[in-house]
Length: 258
Length: 291
Image 1 (tube, chains in turn purple, red):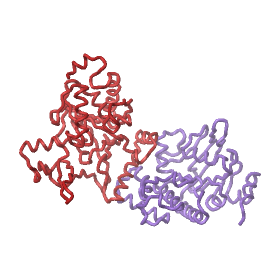
Image 2: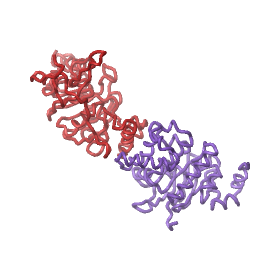
Image 3: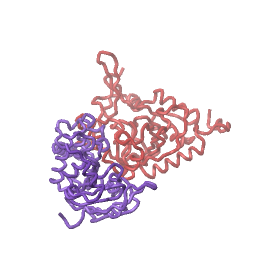
Image 4: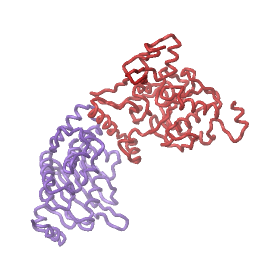
């Protein structure tokens, strides 16, 4: 791990009128590290993630990303074209619902190739080759490269969305409940896949979820949010095995043991 | 009736539209010429014809016509279809301008879905009727998003469409409304002209104006503007046409319509540009199906 954080967040605050979305969130994310953000519905996890990924403009705070070309830059004050460029190259965003992140009217190959074409790839054979390679990496049969995602199962759609996001070799992946809405066996496969990809590619990731099993498997560190505030953070195992804050204790104890 | 007759009647104005409206449209045209390929919004008026019949083109024509102009209307290359005849007579009645079917004699040409075969000159204006001005429309339904994509030059999605064509058909199957990049900046829909006509857009001496009435957009190509058809390195742009000579005039270089003659497989390929075909026949050229 490098000494410089890949993403350095200070005092990010987002209000919806009088309501607090998230308040005064600060953390550093180092290259190759996976950070989990857990909390109940309405605790501000998704608001925070959208602020970090540039989908929402926070009311206060800094999100400094260590860009490839220009070193650490505050992504909130950078121009929109630059931010959107980051969103196509160094960043990836995996939505909870694959339909939000895919173009349902475009074939699987086209979905994976879109990011490549968006950064200037203009050789059909190369684009198709890379798309096939990525479909293979996420365990989608390459025969289905010309099928539309609407003919795919939920799990396959989610894996396609992951392939589409990772094809340009991003360094930071934002994931919003990547396994929500999938049955447990499919969840396990996706988690397995994600864990492999994160380790192989040395990705950093921020995973928002309410599923403690997901963060137990994937995350190195954990932040617990409640009512827009971070109430506890630390190493994943430490937080889950020895929760200090009352809310975290409640969260951990409310997981059903089968 | 002449122009003077209309000026004598105060309720009527030259070329149907009132002067303030024409001024507004001319402003949009000038802006369009200043920013080639950029879609300029304008307050499209209700015209005495339904949307889809060239209300955009008619408004642009009305704004650029002067009493000295000679006007020609093309519908899919032809001068003698209902559409072309109606719009020609519309401007004969409302503007009293001279009309013609000869490309070389016309100073303003309103066209639907074709560029004339005969080379255009610096003295001519070509007005296109455009149904859907937004080249990204069927890929990205949100207008707010397509505008942002234009302003930030995010055109990767256009290639996704071409990618889909190749993956499904083995070649770029888009055969009309083929997107072009104007002066290396805006991606533009050249209206539903066949891609055979795309090379004629490039470096054209005439002014090219595009009017979309329902969508309320005007865009333009000033003379000698560079416009490049999008393609892939390994699937270059191909301005294809039917591999036949014209049955009536024998032309090998013109865009052809296929006409079914009977139910026994009989067919005839003829120039879609009727003026070009007639001119060649008058010069003595004959195709194999000429009577």
